[in-house]
Length: 235
Image (cartoon, rainbow, N blue to C red; front, side, top):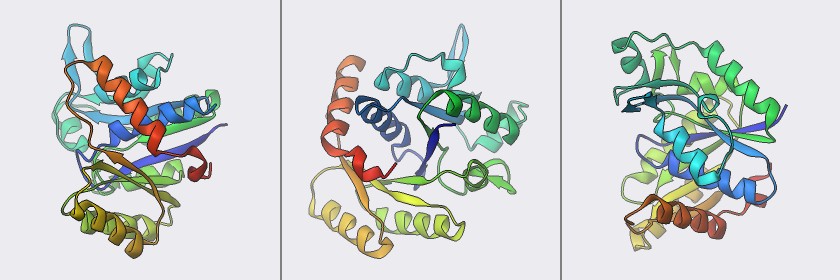
């Protein structure tokens, strides 16, 4: 069975999908037969064909994965809320056993499966007794933490590292997302590294706004090729 990595955000909208997509692309470019996997997405895109898990679809496009989309996620919920609430509202029962089974199917096919979490470590998937951290433990995967570069990130990132360490989770390191080159960004990164004693695996620049998806994908691929060294991941 192939290996896996869990992508954990310090909070919501920190750029987990963006980083997952770029990371899977770089892995594939460096010879790994890698894919992404999104256990639970809230806020899927409603279409005539049904709900589309936009996170899994985005990763598939950026990394050019020739895999049926339905195999790259377990649950897609319509309401953009905490997964446990969306599932309650939509009368969907989230079963960890299904997630584990879906993950294993991919892990048996690929060298590396990059699993993208939902929100931060304590986001409930089912209820207060089963959160993202419980899923991390069940999957038994090492973690890469995605953190913002800007104000507030020191506290969020250090708390996330401390919490994950308390669970006994292996932390590969931290990827900083949305770097703008300010003195605040630079000091934040330096302090995070000093306080957590964790490696900064990559610093991803804030990308310019573009008008079409093709240019966005091109920019993401280029950015991760320049700023993430697969050797530093110690796979």
